[in-house]
Image 1 (tube, rainbow, N blue to C red):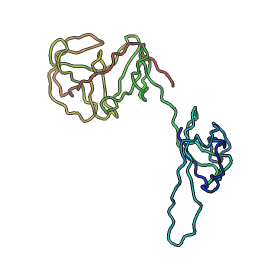
Image 2: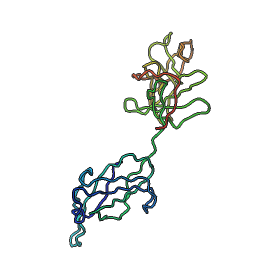
Image 3: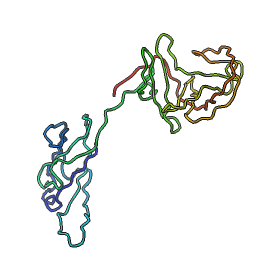
Image 4: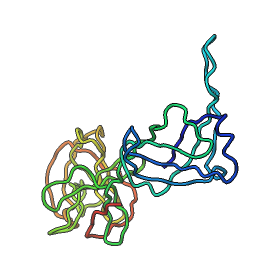
Length: 241
């Protein structure tokens, strides 16, 4: 976790080589609930920058300010964190307890039977064995719906205008859905997005649970675009980092 802490430039000159600085993270603005602590030698901190502060005309001069930067390792806490740095030469400017970044917990991920990442576990989990995985594909967030039992597969309507489920595939419009929608079939990913145009087509076959079956309908549908993804092996599972 990158941190920064503003201190007096004049006081910091007392921190000679070999001086230990203690970086302590807290979960509260009063710096009473400690969550992480790391001791760093002053000569090994990431860097110290001297700040040139703006002073309005005729305003009294303020202290010369340095900003101490250090990346703390092994930080597992989340939420808004606060930092206090102590040691020889450390005189805080702007308060002893200084706010840092807000860290979000790592999201659960969906992986296949071989450990291949399918995507981040989505927020559209349905009842029973059906779930979603969100994956960025060609700059778009694409949602995969999947089920593990009783027939493990990705879910989606793949309709074709040619017999044998060959050529362009079509489906209903995903307008109103917050993401693009994708159906992986082997290493081919079929994707449609909100706003894609609908066209009138006559459907004669459908890919259903890996099998091509006859299907007859005439409707206004969206044509899938295709791209390449890894071949995923069922069953899928969720891991929490």
